[in-house]
Image (cartoon, rainbow, N blue to C red; front, side):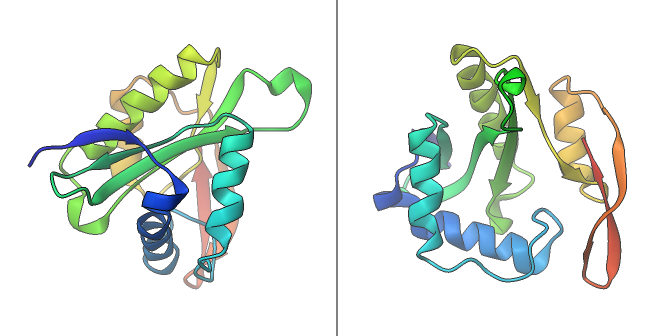
Length: 161
């Protein structure tokens, strides 16, 4: 499988990103949301990324299908936090375990450095061992866990960063 790194656009990738988001919402604790996002939510999502100069980096297979994507955004609004961003990476469920998350993360890290960011922060559900291992492999360190940060699927969830 040939994989190509791309900067995602609303016109080409919104539908595929929405499908990946909604699968994560409905079937995992990767997103602490209950209801699938509607298609129109992608307009404001992409606009917010574009306005703040936050990239949306994707991986496409040889047929141009998106296999995963990642981005980062504002960690906190106060000026002293301007060198820190919070990142997210999502891989389509049928493409997980193939190293695509690592490729996306490496590109996010390089883009963040080139934009002058100093710290990337990931909020990861404590049960998401694949993401925790990926971040450990990349040299991220565990900063702490917020116990019972959210409630989903009938249970309390712990958020690690």
